[in-house]
Image (cartoon, helix red, strand yellow):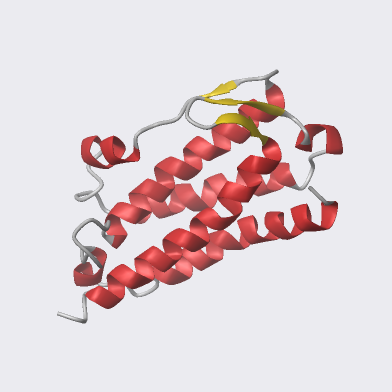
Length: 159
C-alpha cells in the first residue's frame, strides 16, 4: 500500500471515534432500542458490538506486530450479541471502551515502521491477514456502524 493511502486510512481510523460518538449524541431510550429492519441490530446492540470488536481488533493488531506469524482467531458476532447481553446493558462503558481502544491503537499506528506495516499472520476465517489489511477493515468500521446507528435512530421516528 502506498504511504499516502495508508496515512489517509490511519486518519480515517482515528476520526472513527468522533464519528461514532456523534452518531450517539442525544440518543433517547426509544432510539437506542429501535430496529431499522427485522434482521438489523439496535443502536444499543451496535455499541456493544463495537466495544467487543474494537477491543478484539486492538489485540489483533498488537499480535500482528509483536508475534511472528500469529493465528488470528475469528469469532461469531451473533453469539457474542446473544451471550453477552447486548440488548440489555447500558452503553456508557462500551462507548468508553471503543474510544480507549482506538486512542491507544492510534498511538501505535503513528509509530509503525515500514517493516511493521508489512507484518502478517493468518486469520482463521479469511486466511492471510496483515497489518495493512487490518487497517483497511478497521478504518471503515466505526463509520459503517455510525451509519447503522443513524438508520436505527431514524426508524424510531417512522412508526
